[in-house]
Length: 239
Image (cartoon, rainbow, N blue to C red; front, side, top):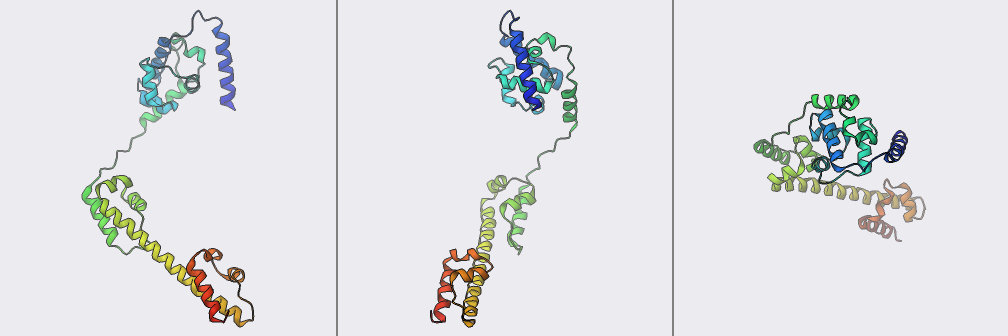
């Protein structure tokens, strides 16, 4: 709401001010204003100014070279962060004495924040870690995403250096999950048989709906093994 109200007031001010303009704002003046505020706010550091305003760095560089001009909504965004009006921005001489206190403080905080250096990719250590994970009997075995997180490197980076080891880790995880799924299905098959036999012993006709009311996973009948177990159990009691 604050942004919308501010934008409406600033655009209205611009419309009124254009009536007194001798000529439309020049491309050179807009570039001059942009270079001036980048210098005053971020010590001529376009990358830092980009982070402060949320404007893409490549766009700033294009505008600084006067090859293109920013769209109105981008100029509004910059002015909003600078706490100035569009009319002020379009006149470079008005910006010389501006302090831009709030955004300048943000820049100081940004420049004081220590940057985390990218972790060095030690191929020997990563290879040893991958081999150790493959040899371990960890249950469940980790996925490659989890392995990458443990090692502090991107999954794609590790895979690029050790495609075979990464494939082996993924296969181990896949096989484990498949075995667990089959084991779960086998357990459900036994449960279905016991329920059918129990119904028969109580004189209750064993329908699929009744079995589903007692089974731990009612959706299990989508598996053909479960349906086969149900039909086998019914045949076992002569149905």
